Image 1: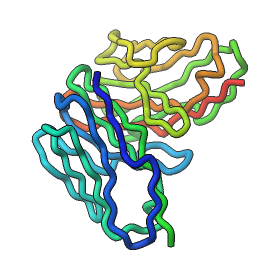
Image 2 (image 1 turned 180 degrees about the vertical axis):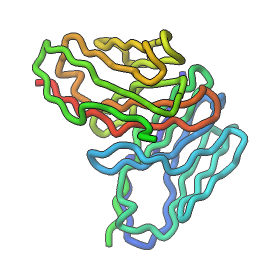
Image 3 (image 1 turned 135 degrees about the vertical axis):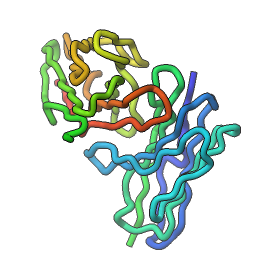
Image 4 (image 1 turned 45 degrees about the horizontal axis):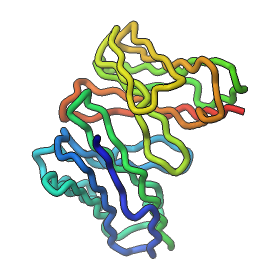
Length: 112
Length: 113
């Protein structure tokens, strides 16, 4: 059974720092991995999607990497801003029915 | 395109009441999903559908029912609401089960008292 784990559960950093969020998964048979942002009481915003054949994806200050063989992904946020404060979720798409398996999320707080 | 829409946005139910959460998509997607998110947790799959007339259970299906009579709609039914079903419910859709993106609705926040 696929399991997705995110470390740390919470992270607080001062503005301007570069930071890394971690996601690990137990079964490498995935179609893709997706990173989401969720603001308190809100829905999911898709940030980056990495196909199983890709190693990384970039969007602005965000860079996500994928190492399928080791079951790991990282989300790198450069020059963090208070507006980046949110919960970040990673999810892998399994190859049976295309279901997404989610981690528990990392709650990020960026202090001014 | 409206994408994935969900109604209602909020609902309070009493224990034992029933309700239907509505989900619709206008992207002609074959696959649709219902997830629930408990406080401080990730999302867990309740039910999914690979096309009209076909549904299957996810990780946490107990207490829920679904139907898929059209490609566009995928309602989720709670028959006898229990406090354990207090959660935020998200509907999602995708064209096929391969390496493409899944699109999410805005969610329905349900409280059972």
